[in-house]
Image 1: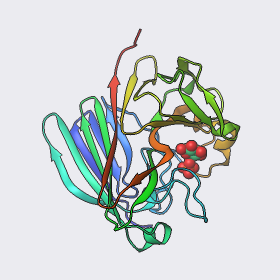
Image 2 (image 1 turned 60 degrees about the vertical axis):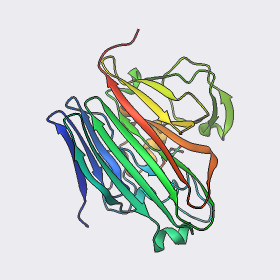
Image 3 (image 1 turned 180 degrees about the horizontal axis):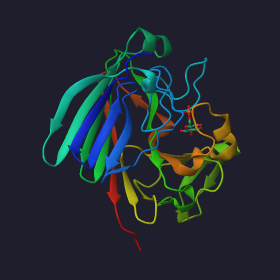
Image 4 (image 1 turned 180 degrees about the vertical axis):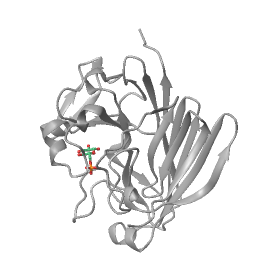
Amino acid sequence: MKKIEVISLVLDDSNRVEINLHGSTITSWISNKEERLFVSEKAIFDNKKAIRGGIPIVFPQFGPWDNNRPQHGFARTKKWKIKDEIKKTSQEVSVSLSLSDDEDTRKLWNYSFELIFEIRLTLNSLKNTLTVINKDSSDFDFTCLLHTYFKLPDIENFRIHDLKTAHFIDKVENGLEKVEQEDSIKIASEVDRVYTNCSKNHRLEISNKTQIILEKTNFPDTVLWNPWIEKATKMADFGSEEYKIMVCVEPGYVSKRLALKSNETFSASQKLTIFFFKFV
Ligand code: BG6
């Protein structure tokens, strides 16, 4: 097996992040001494398959891709490079990684590009910014998303807020279009929804002690995913009981394609901030 290359961002004894260069996948976010991201016990680290958990990057295609090209694109399965070395102050630690087109990506998507992924850790927050630079002489279009797997003590107690009245595509019901009716969404069966042009912030009740505010910039959509029992047992790199301890809340630009002109740049980010008390 090839060497796994992992970068650590260490703010202090209680707050750190790990990033695997394979896919520039954030595989751990320890905040206040506790792991906040889910990575499956069955995740495969072979530098080929996408890592099942953490924050894989979806680009240039969300979901299935035509002509047998890989689901969710290639950014999550390519080896990224360090663009800007680790910078640290007493308040913050950050690093930037990048991915450029090569022979493999050109076989799948024949454009010249650079992706930059900046990871910024503070005492109570993790910010991730994805930048797409069109280095081609032609315009191109794409979809992209941060496939964030949150670790939960128990899915029973998880709730997501701030989606009431949002339109969504229900992938569990063959793409039926619906409008969210709930103020506080609980997951108790398979969920695979693309909320389109929804609220910029979501409040996630992780447990009765912890909440995370997810703030999006330039990501109009949010995908909510939990495979539940049946799908879980069909996934080779996911434990059959693990659906109880994870949920994916994924900010993205996916319900329509983003057109980027030659030499133009697009940036979008998510900021996750932890609060250790119950909202009323
Ligand atoms: C979600 C999609 O973003 O990712 C789901 O909405 C998909 O449809 C899930 O099943 C996991 O995808 P993958 O390729 O990592 O198994």
